[in-house]
Image (tube, rainbow, N blue to C red; front, side, top):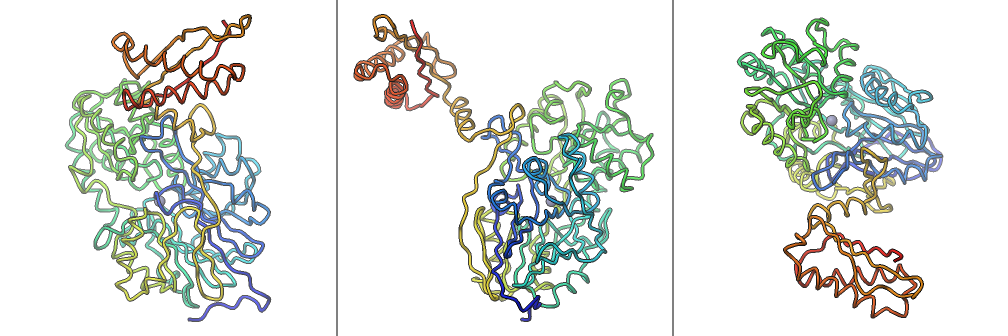
Length: 561
Ligand SMILES: [Zn+2]
């Protein structure tokens, strides 16, 4: 295998570090590092599961990037999905980095940056899929069109003095794409001609047999459901999935319905898609949200956010009858047109139940399988890409641990050596030196939680919220008499969500005794209130474990009498 010889000067090793995106599908972020240069690929958010209380989104850990910021030459965004670009505003808050992306990604991003007053001073370098390569330090970046559920998605060919790396996140081969051209196979193959050292590629569909179907196949399903619906129609999908949104608009318009776009992200992406010419429907096909209630509801289709079951989304609020402008009527049809991603399945099922109880007929993948085709390739797509590019090393990304393994098992059948397939966890690196790869771990990464009221939510807070939701709270108030320099011989107790105090007098009396005993045993250190609180907490923990097997959030408080 021959690799491009960049220069005769002494070579550094090439290191690729996974910040996020190999084990939970989301918050994709990869760092390519060669000598004094770093190129970042993607910077996406994660969506919290139901155990992340009060958390709106999850960010990748920027620590490694910030520690090495002097080396960073640019940030490449592969496509317009939140789990690949959604964290950019949070990174740009810390540091300005030039961004390289397709036109549509830049438009999506500009909307987000505008909201956070970050647009000014951000440099966008638009990638035209038919354009030429970009040099970023020692990296020579080329690219090719791939198919996915958002137009202008790209795969990358990253040339380095150690060899060529293909980075192909979310992709499939769609021979009849809705808005895009086909996967640019000739260009990808041409770029692989000099030999490819490694390929990082999407493994999310590794358990699906055959090839992923074309997006076009869903149009018929939309046409059927929307034309047959008698009342309101609601469709929820990812706001960036504009080909899906276009299909819903097409289906609605063809049966005399007008379309209402509900929710900020949905409005923004529809507006962007229309501006870029992806949705040529006249203005009259749409009705502003605040006008919709006064109209004949059987002539309307609402497209709203909420396909991951987010309780704060438009659909979440509609289900609880808390939406300011949208009231769901009995007999409404609600169509979910997105597969829930791992971690959000329970939330989606909960939302489906709520909508059903509210009188809607809910159509989702389990009852109608032609409602969603994945934007991700299946086993056939994986084998095709591997056969076209023929890298030495394979690194599955964008899935979970079990999906990486499924990908490996599938690819190995092509005669690829098991040791040439590297499954990386978050925080893992792979270093390439003279054509050989070795895997190692140098950094620790931690998810960063973002809540709606505060910027960053500490993991300790999340744990407290979980304990509160499961076992409630138990507050013990001790009084300290300054004059006597002594604790009073009683404690006031407040409890919520743990036990019903009136019916648990014995348990509460026992708890009070445990508290006072702990104070007595530490009488000599009575002025060290932090220690007293610690000891009281320990005593209560032990007492409740023994008597109830539960551990409410314990909160000892000391006040002056
Ligand atoms: Zn994607």
